[in-house]
Image (cartoon, rainbow, N blue to C red; front, side, top):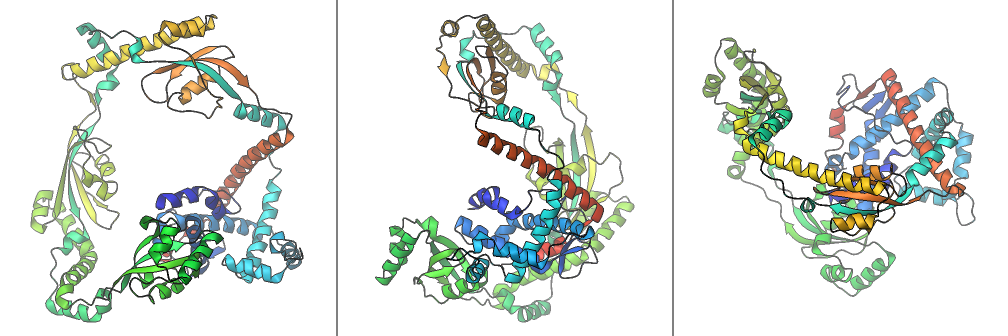
Length: 629
């Protein structure tokens, strides 16, 4: 399902989020979690504050739109996993940047002008063709907007448009350049071609010792081993400290009594859902419900599989919309709902199974409570624990002795390269668990004082570099077999390329392609019309590039898109676009101008942000996108 969502984010819906600009300029992490933010502010640009409430509103609004696009209700966590929160905040920051400069230079739009824009907007026309207030309100409601918010957004949009219109004529793409681009992009070519494969040449013989030695000396990069390092890491994490902490029985009992609701497993239900996509489906489902037909019959009639309809196990709080939760939790096990109006359209729900509320006894919850309290205590004690280790290191106590004394995890890595791979070509999975651990190993030096580094999860680790094996060329005796294989592959490739050169040279001297192809047991094939962006498993980008730099009737060759073969080509036809159709040229010109405008606007916004300063409260961002709206 996430792949389906990503498709929409990359297409029309992605553009919908941007609305006015297509910009990607925020270097996330800069100005991260600033002090001085009010609780209601999630970000700011200069004097423009972006309120937490508006961000959350926009997040929910766009999450609902995306849910309708993919015909599945999405949780806030899924939206955040897809980067929806950052796309929305990026868009809001871009707009706030333009609002700040508009305020500073005194741009504004009057109430009368805004009223006129709304009055003349064809989207709000009623049956008479004139502005219709019920139509206006209905459209706002269906898009989750209030009248006040829409008017404000329209005013800001028109103000920003004044600013952007002033930039429109700063730099224009010349018409002559547009024609060159137009011809370049839309030119098509067809070619006759044959494939030269390794079996078109004689087998490569055995190399002599002199051949191998010479090859070894001429291609040292093939036989060079990267620098490798061995290191010992003392890893201190809160969960590890927690295993050493015992909480007394009274504290466990008090926690159970005080936090009992946290341990109660809320009632949950296995939910199935059918989204009715057309009026015909709505009519059909309505009729079947009236006949008393069940969910399975309706799903089968509408050609929905179990995979299409199964939502999963939901608690009441898991639903995006309270009204849907109320309906689902009013149904009995196995019962099917009536037709429901939802933000996703007309739907039908079924409760497949009910998981009753479970209230664990103290004994059942004891282990979970112990782990929870121990982890909380460990998180508070980790800095004190770090100080203890620093003191031990200052007294020249080894990492091994510290690990044994405090029962702390000690990790050892042997002969790893900068990419984390060892001499056997394997990568230790532990390296990926602790952020930039490999980078740290390759930054510290031998005999260097041990420093504490923080993990992404708030733990700490110390790295001792034990050994460094410098980059070196493996001795010839150890790679003789490898050198032989590489030499034979090189010689075979050279022979194949020599054959391609020979055919190309003779073809460019006006010999028949059919005759040349017949000599290698081939018959020329004809391609469809290609443009410069075409590439596939036969025609690589390099081959296409050669095809488009060769004159009509000329020969060229290049590598195939996949495999070890070569493709020899003769340019058969060259077709240029018809410049007599002004509409096509206009479309191309507008597209190129739009690209240039976006570049200019991007640079403007980046410069303005550097000038005004951007602040982002990432904690507030997380807080407002980790729970269901």
